[in-house]
Image (cartoon, rainbow, N blue to C red; front, top):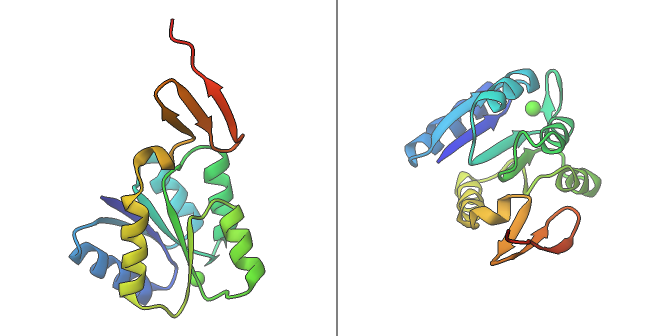
Length: 148
Ligand code: CA
């Protein structure tokens, strides 16, 4: 499993890198939106851990952009000191799957990562397909596929 950590606090970034790597994940770590975009352009990640306050922008804007451009469709967990209800709502609406408030326990973050990675892959794609019926997650439309 390949994870991208986007976190500008060097101590936290290195801690997450070391602990997640020790748990068997392959890790890339970015300290800015620009660096994160460059990674996402070239690598397909299974999960992203995203900080919100980054030196060159807001993690919510970054997430909204990569979701809208379909550059990243797998799970994303926001890690933020921003504990306001509106910030959580904005993060989830921008495409996050979970939101954990700093300070946090690594064991809880790891449990949430495991939970998201347990999802069947189809849950992370735009379409859920069951036999010849598919559901478009965003449009919430149920369609029949015609086999020709
Ligand atoms: Ca930060």
